[in-house]
Image 1: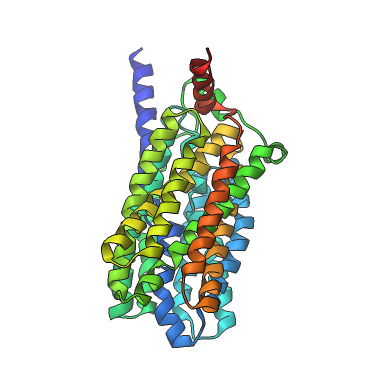
Image 2: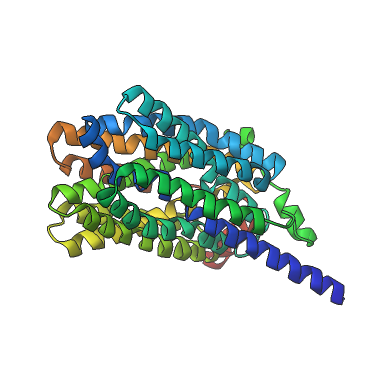
Length: 420
């Protein structure tokens, strides 16, 4: 008996060490390193090279589209070989690709090619492999575990965004790029190497059955739910991230310094942490996927507040509300994947949803930039984003109950308790 308890205790520690490793790695994930600082790099780079705002986002947009193709491939590799084997070399390649952006000379083709390379390799440092590893180790408290791990994105953004904005303003944008690459190598790689240990299956037969259960990607693609979720993640990512990526220049245009604008946006990152944890707890306890409607409502309110902001306080409040929604977005995608399609092929299926999210994240900023170049203000962009999120609410309201795991059990219990 004592040996069983010891094994169980060791397994529990191993599982939570993977959560801690994922938390640390996500502090320097694709969001804090590639996406969120993009607004801070926009003013100095467009000024130095003479590009428009829409041109600045071309490389990121094209890279995002190709990343959408790479995401399910990387997820499939994680399903087959294990997350750690893919992460260790991938983290190094991503850091190197990001560092090469510091060598830009103003040649637009060079910029687009290097941006595409960095964006595609950022898939390794996206949540896909970390979510796969955690979902394979947790049945109960899966939402909380994923929420804790993915909150690293908010922690990293809160620390990195004002720091890199300071470096850009006082030393130069090239130093800012190199500092981001150094952060990836110094934090993510050691975290995965030293802490990413233990089997993906625990010693309990019930959990082994749960981690081996699930639809293949081809089966999932035949369901209406799969396509509804794909549309939701694409539209919501385009709407929220399109505004977020332009938030620094939006505030800068209204008179805020680059450092102040970066600091205001950093409140988004802090709220993102709260959004991830709170959403994880709610997903573990509420048996309906419609819980996501709350977070889309936060996003709509935040975007409207930012659009109407005339003071620092209003901008902070709007940024915080968008942060709550942004924190929940990938959390919802991860939990919905396991709840609707199971864990066995989670890496590939979640990779597809992350691909949709990435396309939206990549196209949204370019669309917002185009609307700004056309109208010379952000008002049309604000209403376009709100319209996209309202469409997401309609789609999510029509979605079916969970089909696998704890989510399915909660849905059944919820329906039973509401029956006369």
